[in-house]
Image (cartoon, rainbow, N blue to C red; front, side, top):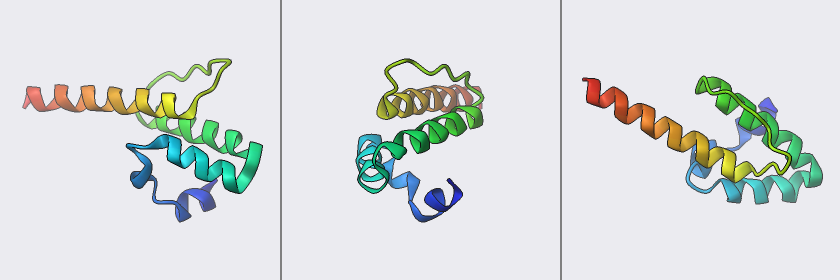
Length: 81
Protein backbone atom coordinates (compact mmCIF):
# COMPACT_ATOMS: atom_id res chain seq x y z
CA UNK A 1 0.00 0.00 0.00
CA UNK A 2 2.78 2.42 0.91
CA UNK A 3 4.52 1.76 -2.41
CA UNK A 4 1.34 2.56 -4.31
CA UNK A 5 0.66 5.72 -2.32
CA UNK A 6 4.28 6.83 -2.64
CA UNK A 7 4.21 6.52 -6.42
CA UNK A 8 0.78 8.03 -7.04
CA UNK A 9 0.05 11.71 -6.63
CA UNK A 10 -3.22 11.26 -4.73
CA UNK A 11 -3.99 14.98 -4.63
CA UNK A 12 -4.29 14.83 -8.41
CA UNK A 13 -7.21 12.43 -8.05
CA UNK A 14 -9.04 14.26 -5.25
CA UNK A 15 -11.58 15.77 -7.62
CA UNK A 16 -11.72 12.70 -9.88
CA UNK A 17 -11.59 9.55 -7.74
CA UNK A 18 -13.14 7.53 -10.56
CA UNK A 19 -9.97 8.12 -12.56
CA UNK A 20 -7.87 6.68 -9.73
CA UNK A 21 -10.19 3.66 -9.64
CA UNK A 22 -9.72 3.12 -13.37
CA UNK A 23 -5.93 3.38 -13.11
CA UNK A 24 -5.70 1.05 -10.12
CA UNK A 25 -8.00 -1.43 -11.84
CA UNK A 26 -5.89 -1.30 -15.01
CA UNK A 27 -2.80 -2.19 -12.97
CA UNK A 28 -4.14 -4.57 -10.32
CA UNK A 29 -7.40 -5.90 -11.77
CA UNK A 30 -9.78 -7.04 -9.03
CA UNK A 31 -6.97 -6.44 -6.50
CA UNK A 32 -7.69 -2.74 -6.92
CA UNK A 33 -10.76 -3.14 -4.71
CA UNK A 34 -8.57 -4.21 -1.80
CA UNK A 35 -6.37 -1.14 -2.27
CA UNK A 36 -9.37 1.15 -2.62
CA UNK A 37 -10.94 -0.15 0.58
CA UNK A 38 -7.64 0.41 2.41
CA UNK A 39 -7.41 3.95 1.00
CA UNK A 40 -10.99 4.74 2.03
CA UNK A 41 -10.54 3.30 5.53
CA UNK A 42 -7.40 5.39 6.04
CA UNK A 43 -9.06 8.50 4.65
CA UNK A 44 -12.01 8.12 6.99
CA UNK A 45 -9.68 7.42 9.93
CA UNK A 46 -7.69 10.59 9.24
CA UNK A 47 -10.91 12.61 9.07
CA UNK A 48 -12.10 10.99 12.30
CA UNK A 49 -15.18 9.62 10.52
CA UNK A 50 -16.81 6.30 11.17
CA UNK A 51 -16.46 3.96 8.22
CA UNK A 52 -19.21 1.52 7.43
CA UNK A 53 -18.73 -0.45 4.28
CA UNK A 54 -21.81 -0.87 2.13
CA UNK A 55 -22.40 -4.10 0.26
CA UNK A 56 -22.08 -2.18 -3.00
CA UNK A 57 -18.66 -0.57 -2.36
CA UNK A 58 -18.13 2.45 -4.61
CA UNK A 59 -14.72 4.06 -4.22
CA UNK A 60 -15.65 7.37 -5.85
CA UNK A 61 -18.78 7.71 -3.70
CA UNK A 62 -16.80 7.21 -0.49
CA UNK A 63 -14.13 9.71 -1.55
CA UNK A 64 -16.78 12.26 -2.51
CA UNK A 65 -18.48 11.77 0.86
CA UNK A 66 -15.19 12.30 2.72
CA UNK A 67 -14.36 15.39 0.63
CA UNK A 68 -17.73 16.96 1.37
CA UNK A 69 -17.33 16.32 5.09
CA UNK A 70 -13.86 17.85 4.99
CA UNK A 71 -15.17 20.94 3.20
CA UNK A 72 -17.99 21.31 5.73
CA UNK A 73 -15.60 21.02 8.65
CA UNK A 74 -13.11 23.44 7.06
CA UNK A 75 -15.84 26.03 6.47
CA UNK A 76 -17.00 25.62 10.06
CA UNK A 77 -13.48 26.25 11.35
CA UNK A 78 -13.11 29.33 9.17
CA UNK A 79 -16.39 30.73 10.52
CA UNK A 80 -15.12 30.34 14.08
CA UNK A 81 -12.07 32.47 13.29
